Length: 158
Image 1: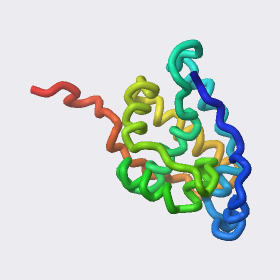
Image 2: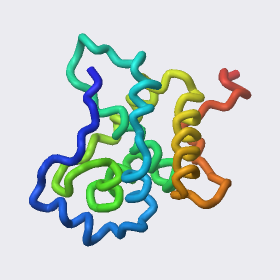
Image 3: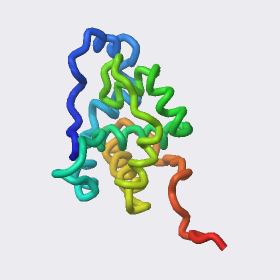
Image 4: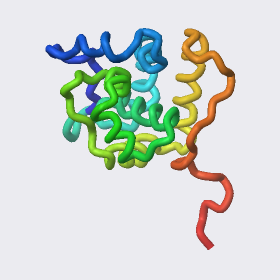
């Protein structure tokens, strides 16, 4: 089941974001100005709406992978940084005291939900397009970490 992304839960510490994440921070702007609901439409066919326990919100999982494409971090380092980096938590829609995912969840998300190898690239491209339209990103150049994308050459081992 798809668990829809909700605004952060009520927290006594939510005001920390206003203190430690400046209003002009790139991740804050992205979170505030980009509507990531297109992720639901793109990934709806990969989720069962009737069976199984609730999945981690696909928007949050995509946002983890988007952070990974922006910052050169491994899955483990990304999740670890998400524990203490308030800009990451704000971008992920988490309250300051909320726990982060297990790094293996990112691998499962890539393998089970992003079945088409190009889907992640399409979703990132769509996000970049929206960010350019909103003026969040000024440059027309973006470097993407392609560690987990398949090459069309040598797909099979000898």
